[in-house]
Image (cartoon, rainbow, N blue to C red; front, side, top):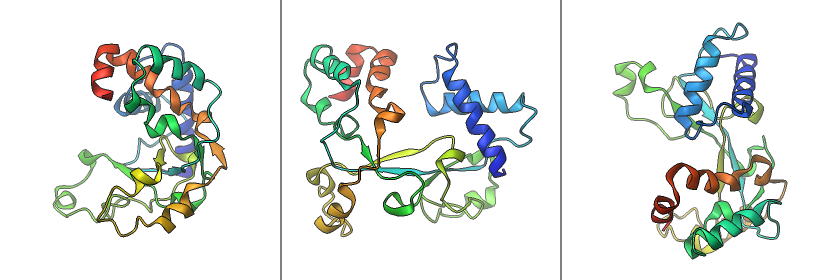
Length: 214
């Protein structure tokens, strides 16, 4: 699809997500189905969603000196409904909110892709994927502007203890961590990332949420 069509698809997603009647968009599949349905009825877009949809990444570093303005309510939920669960408090999505710059290759680097396997040939599927960034030759280069993407990935660096826990990964040195830990060009609050837990509890119920979040 063209850049124009991708931009229009994103507009459809935003309008769909802001519609008060669409309260069941809880999963990626829910969103894909809703946008696909809207595309089919749109006169502005001639093509469907891509076979390989590029998902840009956004690095979220290890700074903890800022929090989201509505984080107080979330912390109250953790303290009361989640029984002050320490494991929940340690979640990266709760602790870290400061991000690198959007649409900058460094330090977020290559995006990932979401592949519709039903649209690939048997010959292609028989080939071992080359990488998680560009698994098949039919997939485009894994770089895409946020303004043209239906989804993006928040890539959490975590603290040094978590980052260094992968003992056999020679890329994860203290120097590499320091180079990526202290970016503060934006806040995940703008994307309301911290609200996922409230929706998680709403969807699965408090008892099940406590079990799943440990």
